[in-house]
Length: 332
Image (cartoon, rainbow, N blue to C red; front, side, top):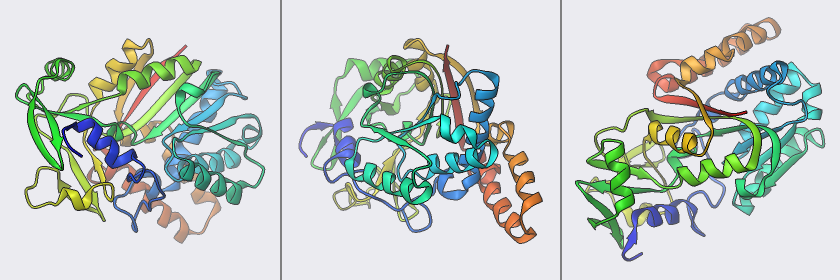
């Protein structure tokens, strides 16, 4: 790849024909990284509990859409369905379940997983992008989506270009510079595509709640966070010892999310910002501990303790609880 913007390079790395996300990848112990979904089914279970509360308070219709965006294997939405069946089974029949997934191979994997898990009890619909969806009422959920948007790299007034796998900061880009000034960065990543994504969601649905979990902070961090994950090793992108050409499209590449940028993109699109919380506070507020109590009453002590240890990884500050944030928006 010669003389491309960094966002084009990253997009090709992740989403090109042979990109990292274009084909099935293991996530968890056997893969390159852990996610909250791969850690515990109670992550999806807590979202199921929240969806039921949205129906009970009248925000989400009992025949509304539950839509996951960027579903990887489909495990998260399947966990949501499983807990809805346990907690309020009639909603499994009335709610409509949707996945936004651009890759045919991943769609096929998700369809087969749902078929194996639920038979014909859950009807799953796929769209390649939000722009294909039109609905009146929905709950949108995404896990680790904003860190997978391509980004530009900015350093002291200059934007990066990529020649081969070498990064040079010598481009003048007014849009990138404007964002860098807005979020008080003199260096770092500037995400590309948040604004378009927010507009697409606003156009897709008349009334919705959107909830997303990702790692990052409200304000931009003062340096580059761009990194590569390979078999649970974290490799700083600018480490002179790494061979990018060997890692390209074979490992995950990511960066910390600036949630102020996400917030502004949705507010500018006409969607109301509700809150930003740590994952720990969000999951506890939505009832993850109550779900554990229900489990405790129905299973052996050994099984309960196994699930408790997994949930601790989701909520304890020294694991995923503090580093990950939940951001929520609503359109009425």
